[in-house]
Amino acid sequence: MDDYVLVLNAGSSSLKFSVYGRPAGTGWRLESRGQIEGIGTAPQFSAKDSNGVVLGKTKLDAAVRDARTALESLAGWLAGRYQGGRVLGVGHRVVHGGAKFAGPTIVTPQVLGELRELIPLAPLHQPYNLAAIDAVAERLPDVPQVACFDTSFHRGQPAVAELVPLPKHIRDTGVQRYGFHGLSYEYIASVLPESAPEIANGRVLVAHLGSGASLCAMKDRRSVDSSFGFTAVDGLCMGTRPGSVDPGVILYLFQNLGLSAKEVETILYKKSGLLAISGISNDMRDLLGSAEPPARLAVDYFVYRVAKEIGALSAVLGGLDGLVFTAGIGENSAEVRRRICAASAWLGIELDAGANERNGPRISRAGSRVSAWVIPTNEELMIARHTGRLLGLI
Ligand code: ADP
Image (cartoon, rainbow, N blue to C red; front, top):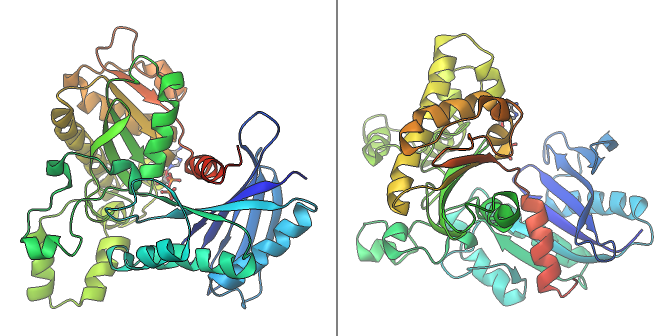
């Protein structure tokens, strides 16, 4: 086995990984991907090769209860599978790079300290991302690590796009609009010249519609605004997050319903959105397959919010040249795309129904003033590329 780069995406109860090899002259090639789920409760390991063939699926010992023990378990599997191969570097998905990190960075003790200071801005993700970096440093002290941020792609936006108009002493604590899903948007921006050359240098909206959902407005492949704000709760309706709600509602939860901060957090991150509207599921497939009125309302609201945000961000761009769909719903649901495009017809989007059913790549008619596309995202490959570049591996 060749030497490889390991990409890690660590969450509160899961450690997702991808292994990228480097065959001569061909860039990074996915060797395998998988995850340890149920960390701390019922840990389970699964891995597939690049063709989706299952390489392993096993229950793990309950001792796998945190990033360190999960990494130990993963390292054991990697050593067995890739005998003779060395880990050249580890690239991490890190949710928050704050205002400072406008690009990926090699992890040093100083960088790690700065990233720890950002924990209050993303308490549900950042600690777990950093715990994985600590675990790798402990187990593989000589292997360089790279942190790749979900926020970086959005740095450099105009001041008005980043502003949260609260008193200065509050803004000075770091309250601004950061934007997220940046690795996905950066990947799409990187493939636009090849995948959709006629819009690559124009005004483009990318709709990342998965269990988390957001839109990014790009000019010349750079982010000028997005629907996510200070946190990844803002903007579009998501699987279990509401998207934008009147801040007065949050005050009401505290002042009139007497909820605690923890309860409000759980509602905003885990109990709202599609799940709350439908009362059935946070999974778009379940909702599209259901005839229940609340499930239909959930899909209606999802489409309505995306279309409304498309209108707003088209105004930001001063018009629109192309609309790109990506992520789980965006790549796979012809129905949701059809409905969003129908609601955005006023902008000049004319859908090609057949191409849409075939999942693109181009799903608008030849004469459509605004073109529409389906482009699969690949955040892990983006991290592998950054890691290889920063470590001088390629
Ligand atoms: P994550 O943010 O967890 O990476 P994904 O990008 O994998 O999420 O997207 C998950 C969402 O994609 C789920 O709501 C799922 O229902 C939806 N999805 C996947 N395939 C389809 C499909 N064929 N039709 C509709 N929705 C789909």
